[in-house]
Image (spheres, rainbow, N blue to C red):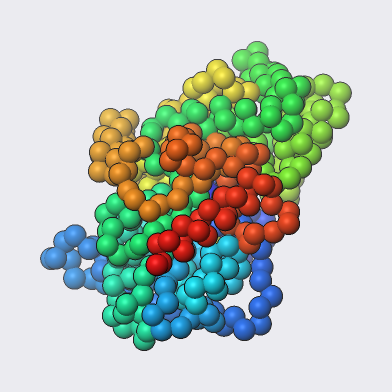
Length: 477
């Protein structure tokens, strides 16, 4: 949930792939849901192959005979016959060569002469099971099908790739794909000997208000209580301006485009959700000094309102590059109803949240500084408007309950999966927090532990990386 969740944001991409500037929402979504970061490797021996494997459209219906081509990438620079296969699982993003040419998994594969593989999730990147993203075609997008894709991939590779027939398999993932690591080990325990799941949300929940609570805690921890208070008061002042019929002033302050209706709940909710998501990107994507730097900018201004609004405006303009910022609900919907594949994968992810997970990061809690104006109704309304009236509250609740019943929520009952979380990461609230079962890395955020062991690592980060390396050695004995 690089990723997000992975979390849900109300997001879009500016119309037309040729357009140079993304929309504000699309820009934020990509930052929150891109593949986890890993540094580039300069090893000239790496020759990454981009390959395709045939998959069933529906693994659970023998009457459905259609198939499609799933993309994966492979690096055999270290591979020797009989050595293990290390697979990084793609999530709600487009895969690239990064994880199989650099980072801690790469280093472990080198130690064990392993084959490096990166699989792409159905409906994301270039892995298109059907020609478009119409509502009818989206019904084959779910995690059970994606896990079955991986099972077929592993069995096919072991039977057809020379030297792999007796090889053990290690799987690795971050955010939503870390969830997949855990659930794959539960459903297909004999196909992999172990897994590493970084920042895995394991319990599905419709109203994920805890996300904003952890964001607030992380801002206080790294940026100070004065920064938290300024954000809280600045956003409260913007809310009060709408309440006192000064919405036109907010539009001027944030350079919001004219279609925005200051009396529309959906428009106002959309705006405040995006405001909170700008801060989500700061916290979820935190690296050394990031939260502190943003707080310094906000605190440098003369008032709460100016501090918050000037920072938001600078972020909006980075994304849009336009004379005005279109933050209306209608603009979002017109974009998200587009059923063509695009380089922003918002529509697919929102469908999965409506159909499997919820994870709507609402303003329901008072223990967070981002206001009160992005309620659950924003997200459930979006589900129904996008995918049909059947996607109402009770339907979403039932689907989330089914996900938890099927996979076990916070008691997945799996063995040989190493779980890690960053202390600052809002997604950890949906993961296992018991330190006997998971490693919590202080002052780190979402999926920040995939890099090679380095002198820059904190003692806790280094210890966690050394622990997974030792576990892999045990699993491969």
